[in-house]
Length: 368
Ligand SMILES: NC(=O)c1ccc[n+]([C@@H]2O[C@H](COP(=O)([O-])OP(=O)(O)OC[C@H]3O[C@@H](n4cnc5c(N)ncnc54)[C@H](O)[C@@H]3O)[C@@H](O)[C@H]2O)c1
Ligand SMILES: [Zn+2]
Image (cartoon, rainbow, N blue to C red; front, side, top):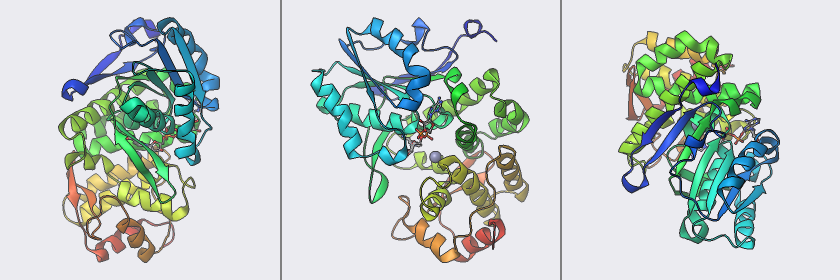
């Protein structure tokens, strides 16, 4: 398929004066239509890291240096461990040293770490400037770049310092995923899968049929999967921007996943790997609570496994699991809130008896 043969899809995130488009397609950086209608200050600032920059910075720089009178680039060190205040400061240093004004546009070229940091810097600089997301991981294309959550980590918790700040546009160019390591790609598939059970069971069935093409990164199949994921996220965020209620369902599998990440030490399992296992546990709990048929939980487990994501949870010990999950942001007065399915394609927040959580873990752990 030639990039020029297929027009990119545009998905509107409807948030009154903060509305914007998510564009999904191939070769987007080079296409003029990707940039049309975007705010244009004298200065542009690309935030990236050396790993992503080595692959994709040159083509972005070539396009943006024709759009801005001055184009600045800041390369942050790669990795979640640098999603912190001293690293964020480097963005502010560069903006100030270059004399960037309020019309400056920030471009986030990278995965969720770069997107979250560049977005948070844009939220703070001169009380808020515009930014464009150019996500380069599957996770960032289907999840973190859409919805305006930006943050850095604190020693005492992930994403604890942040702001809601919507981007001006999101460009999801599937060609950028060509250089993504296999493990990162598969991890991103977990966030694609999650949209089916919570919102659109037909999409889940489509994923069952197209899992092999997705794993082979077939561009047309990837575009369809990313587009549908972004449509669902846009729909949810459009109804509940600040997560007063509905938006929490996007955390399907995440109460368990966060416990896995914290329990094993961050980075031992990738986030999407923990979400894969977390969705299996949450689906099992939904079935055990009588909310969905067991066959639905089994199909979720099968699809997670087909995407080479873990379905067996690590054996942390039930007490430790419960302790970790009570620290989850959704927990209220020490009661763990799970996103549970109430039908194939629908979910809500729910508590569960400790004994039942224990049963779920016993049935799905590597070692009981
Ligand atoms: N804001 C939100 O709503 C939201 C939602 C989910 C996750 N997040 C955040 O996203 C972060 C995780 O994002 P991630 O999974 O994208 O991780 P990441 O940004 O660390 O990227 C993963 C790795 O892939 C490399 N990489 C990125 N794109 C590449 C490419 N095209 N080719 C080769 N290598 C590439 C990166 O340099 C990095 O080493 C976490 O910090 C999480 O908190 C935010
Ligand atoms: Zn996630």
